[in-house]
Amino acid sequence: MFYSLLFQLLAALAAAQYYEGYEGDEPMLRGAPPRTAPGPMLRFGCSQIVIERLDPLVDPGMAPSSHMHQIVGGNAFAASMPTTNIAKLGSCTSCHFKEDLSNYWTANLYFKARNGSYKRVPQMANQFNDGDNAGITIYYTSSGPSSATAFKPGFRMLTGDSTQRKSDNLGKKMQQCYRCYTAENWGGSPYSPCMDPQLDTDYFPKQPCAGGIRSNIIFPLCWDGRSLDTPNHKDHVAHPVGGPTSFPIVNGECPSSHPVKIPQVMLEVMWDTRAFNNPDDWPEDGSQPLYLSNGDHTGFGQHGDYVFGWEGDSLQRAMDNACYLRNCSLLSPMPPKVKNICQVSATVKEDLDAWLDELPGGLKGV
Ligand SMILES: *[C@@H]1O[C@H](CO)[C@@H](O)[C@H](O)[C@H]1NC(C)=O
Ligand SMILES: *[C@@H]1O[C@H](CO)[C@@H](O)[C@H](O)[C@H]1NC(C)=O
Image (cartoon, rainbow, N blue to C red; front, side, top):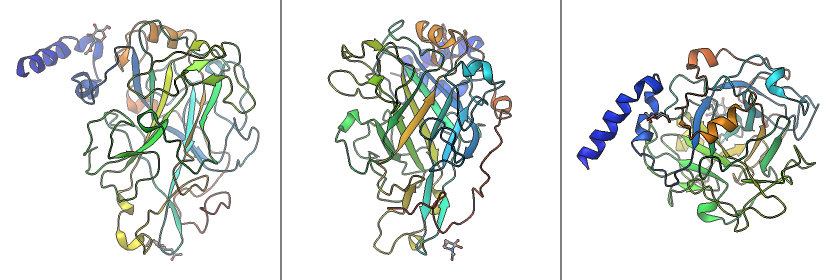
């Protein structure tokens, strides 16, 4: 055991010339959290580019859109986005790899105090992503080298359902989950996303989480091979025949209607709930005080949006060449201080940090 660890550590040091600056991945390379599938897996942070009430997929052209989002990626993000190559429209990205000008966005989280006022729960840089300006951690995973077909320019999709208020009962195959960290610095769980039988739930944690709450959102794995989008932004993608795969497995047989395996995209968001753990501010009956920006008080309505925007065939090459975490000599990494410069100025101006009588957009949490 000791020698195996020592060997892996030395091997990692020897490879440092390929991997300089990403020693943050080293604990993951050593196998914590463990990954059971052998395939390629990119994992990298994208800093926040803007928080605002826009949704170019569901409410194209509407400013403001129905609810607040936190957005990362390329700076071509706007109230409406053409189905052309957004990698060519943007000039920078807040993502770790310079080639990725995609956009990714999710709902925000709000805390409702006992007096009825709401406050946005801030995000924080995720584990192993020191220096990031909050944002979202992005994963692209496939079951083996050359087994996934990368997305085409103009591709977009949505996963989850903002109107959902009950469980899909998918157990370890759940497609979105929350992890309640029981101690600071991501303490409490060594499990892969959505695999912890105690701390991962598809509903909001019922108890205060001393180390914050993580939200994971997993996209489907199969594509119809033709459509860049469909009216509900979902029907051109599908889960494998046996239902969704869990995050660590990333495999299964695609249905004949959706025969093409795409990389499994997963979004990971860290919310810093530490300022909101005082039981005196929680409801008197001790029930949890959290709301998604769409008004959802259960957590089941978490959802994620994706607009593909990698330059050329860069994503395909990374997946075909077994790139792992941030170790990918085919791609151009950027240190946080460089990617953090990329910003989009908000078109819908709102005070993001005030105590509010209602959720942005006049939504009442239900
Ligand atoms: C990084 O990737 C290269 C090429 O695949 C590999 O040889 C090297 O061992 C990897 N480095 C680490 C630290 O895993
Ligand atoms: C409601 O409670 C919060 C937390 O205690 C406090 O900061 C805020 O000012 C209160 N808002 C109103 C309108 O009293």
